[in-house]
Amino acid sequence: MQLQEIAVELPAAGSGGPGGIGVAGGARQPRAVPLLSRMVVPLLAGIFTVLAIAGLQYASSLLVPIAVAVLLTLLLGPLVRWMGNYGVAEPVGAALIVFGTMSVLGTTILVLATPAAEWLRRAPQTMHRVEGKLQTIEPVATIQATAASVARVTSVAGGSDSTATRIEVAAMSPLRQFGWTTAHMISGIFTVVFLTYFLLASGSMFRRKIAYLFPSGTQRTRIKRALFEIEEQMSRYLLINTLISGCVATATWAFLAAIGMPNPFLWGVVAGVLNNVPYIGSLITLILIGFVALASFDGSGVLLLACGGFILIHIITCNLLAPMVLGRKMPLNTVAVLISLLFWGWVWGIVGVIMAVPITVMIQVVCTHSERFRGVSILLGNWGAHRIS
Image (cartoon, rainbow, N blue to C red; front, side, top):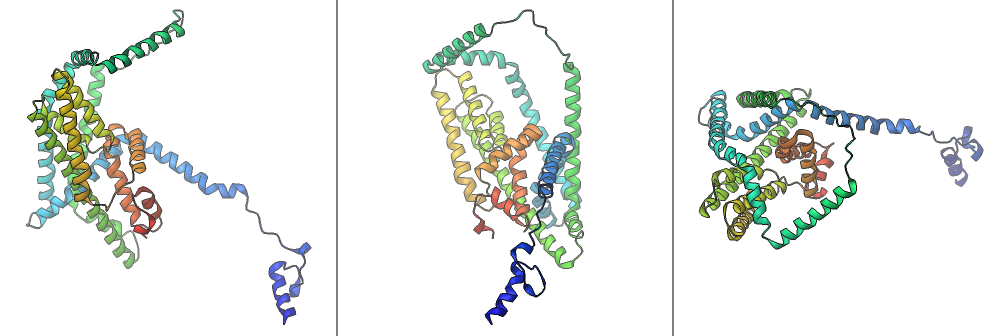
């Protein structure tokens, strides 16, 4: 019995001849996979990633309006469906919502255009006044004196070469650049408005079309359910986040008006818009409020009151109200938020910074409903693998 077992095991060990009589010399070595074959998949993935990022940058004028329209569709979709419950047709409801929203935004821009232009016109004088007030503060004066000394030493050490050849490149004329920028912005706005309208008016048509790309009936049902859940979660996130930004804008406006700050409505709107940019947006708003307070009032009392009041508003709305209303269904971890801000800001500029978090949340929600990319959702989320396993 033992001999039979040995004879059976020998082919597995060596398989050098018939009947299992194999020796070490006749053993078949495992086939070595070439290094190039193992590097093909990572190499192709890297090339595809680089090409995709380059495509996002190159086609930004096309992709940014489409991304904005998709996010607006997810934001305004619940309102169109709510109107549909009362017998309003989807095309009519979409027209009322889209063009009503555009009218409100246009009126707000017209109201804010005059004070914003006035602040920009007085920017040099305001900067000079703020600089003079900062010099009266001893720590700031010490830092400025040190920086001036370092600058003088650097200029002396570096010297200047008067014989060096200077090449000046003729820039585009201001009028031509303004006309090009204006035309680009108007075309983008029209693209966003009409694309948002047609996406809202079509209702769930595109969701059904995507589901019919899959042949099996069971897969179609599962895809329809997943797309509906993705749309619901994203709409809820965008709607609640917009309401929270509106609360920040309203509270900032009321507080700044109460303490006598000039143009409180302007700075309230700025606070609400920048609230969509985590961490960086609130810091920029705090600096702007401090700058305006320092330029408009004498002494540091109003400066401290304005900055302290905004910090309190930010703590209440973003650290108490947002977790209570939004919950922890779709949180992103801090590293994912910061990387998304850097990446989308590098790819699409200011618009990318504002849309970075919604786009990343959308990617996370989509990956949550895919077995293959479930790990990406875990990587972006603020929980462990046990939460979505």
